[in-house]
Image 1: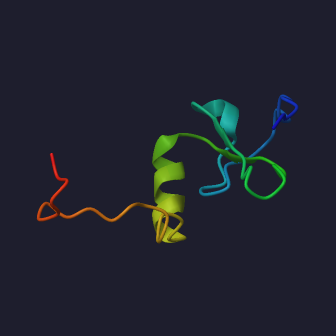
Image 2: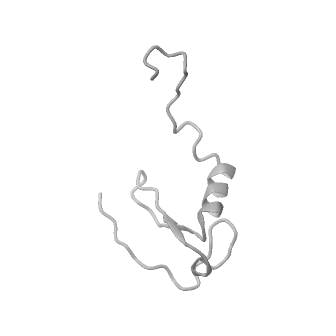
Image 3: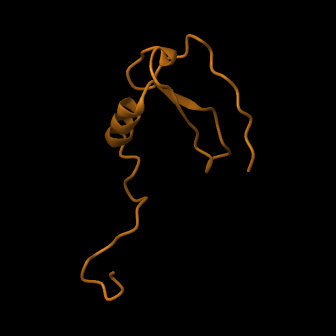
Length: 73
């Protein structure tokens, strides 16, 4: 899988809070399970984390683990 890296516009805004990303510590996120569509930009990890939580983006994407399982530890 390959993608092209492009610098976002200077006025690009955060997908969560709307701040200009380059006024902060920007993060680019791309969904490469869906043809590596357009990137989504966040101004920092706090906005990315909140966005993920509010949109339930981790629901169903993690393995289930129980300390009672025989293969534990």
